[in-house]
Length: 409
Ligand SMILES: [Zn+2]
Image (tube, rainbow, N blue to C red; front, side):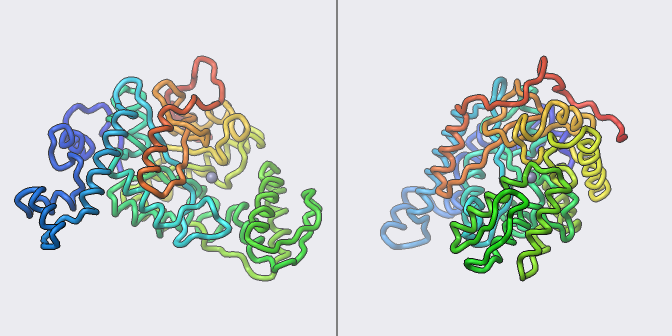
């Protein structure tokens, strides 16, 4: 999907522009969902339809639809007032990782499909969701449309393909998926090895975690499993990559039942995502903490991931997400420079906040609203517009701020 072609144009030849014009003209996008607009066209007037509905004679726009349409209009008005677009605008970039079919007691922070559907519906009603690269270009050029937003998913989980993609398509939204290529086709990230091992522990089964300073531990219920998994992840997250893998192998060896090998996407699924119009971005090969590696190893992780995606998709990725993504702790100015040298045009962190036009395009903040209720969800997005400036990697003179593709080493 060539996103660059939208940048800097003035004519209304893209879907985004048309939507904006329709909104300005009071056309079909003027505050009414298509379903409501169709229903409206079938009836002489809104008042007639409302009266028929309330008297129990149909065809009818039910009260629920009217309330939903009114709420959608309110969401749009609120989003427009907090994210006005143009010069000095702000860009909310939403951050997701996994989505589960049904609530998982060990994955409290992961939205289930119904929650994601509610959030995406609200987003589609309140915001103009743009591809990330286009949004960043327009943010920095001062041409961002009002109430613009972006959606991102990190890591490359299979549920992104199976659950998130159909919902994005249902609501005609686009998103960027940052993929760690070393786990495609049957791999497993270290945090999932931890969680799935802890999930499979028998009640009161003791495991030996002495090698990472946690002693003998056991679990009894969901809360103790979550606590143990969190402790293990915290203890090993910043270990060197090889050592982290050794600890994970040792942990998995203490569990009787096999761990899942289908948590991440296959290569074909990544290709299908791209064919469906989604953006695929880089996320390193093995998801290391870049700041804990020497420069050459970090460069290899970034470049090898970029090359793998390029050969998988036939085009180089333009957007990157730092693994773990915490400024200064997980990446530094050196890694921002490596990402720029790899030819990426923008990169996102996990610093909590909204992107502004003066920020360095290689460390844009994001946030992940957990709310299911659409009103609360949209209200949180609006509040984030006033969020204090996140603490980012300091960059002398805010350089590098522009992409400079170079050849791979
Ligand atoms: Zn990640």
